[in-house]
Image (tube, each protein chain N blue to C red):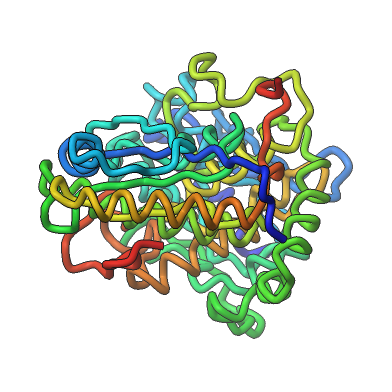
Length: 290
Length: 144
């Protein structure tokens, strides 16, 4: 990844020097040097701190929606999954493409991430970004598994009986503190006012620790991001309790692909499958109901 | 296991234009159906989203029924296409989490199908009786 880091610093310095952008949003070495952390460079000197390696897993796209970034011309370091999220935001008119300078990086997959093994869109497409930085000596691209083959845990859960499944998810959900980190880290969970922050209707309340509300939160959230999921795996990565939330999202993705064709958020054009409906779709309830 | 004394609570979301009229017709036609049902009138079956269904279960429902117009007959042209698209997904995620998906019933009932409405409520109540009380998704805030 050294080459990308060097090229990135060069590009960032040039952009900041010519005042083409106000700031460059990227990664820098973390304090403990174990993983890189998000970093904002505003002067050409600061650009020397930027880096990109296989621990730069945080999705940067979500910062673009914060007030402090709105009126600024921003250059942004984008992996493949992050690019998909940005494309969603642009398509949905949440951010303006003209305000952005997209620096695509060819990602080799993050350390220890099961998502990257099944990722088919590691690098952003060259025509979608302003500049694409890549490693010339890309060492053996890992072969991407298909959506159906990634995450064998899903089949394992599907094979369980109903009560076993319930017990499994009860075990998982009872660890949930409802800290909403999964929601905050998710690059496609971008509603202006989240339904879980509203006080009325009080579907869930923050103070209580009980299963029904955990179920509610996770079912509804997975539902809301089901056709928008870009498979970045942030939800599972940031969860302090290690709840395998991605299994829910991946399961819903599989169902959507099975029923309504293989739409991929941020790769294919809008509309996404759950935002429209028409008569030619299969009717699973039919004459008898189900 | 049959729960003879158990009377399930059944929440039915009925679309204003077809199923509610069907239920109405069943009433004027003096057709008898179990009083376990609590009908909630909604403007269209697509008004019912996943959170309403889960909320009903949290609040003490043993079964939830969503009744809308037959596909193609929707008062708003495409409303029930949305319903069937969402609810089939909700059913599969309920199944996956281990909450019984058969406690959610989606059925198309038109305005003149009073007998179909009656038969549906009867058979669903019978099934719910057989399944027994549903405690998996109960919200403690709503416990009496």
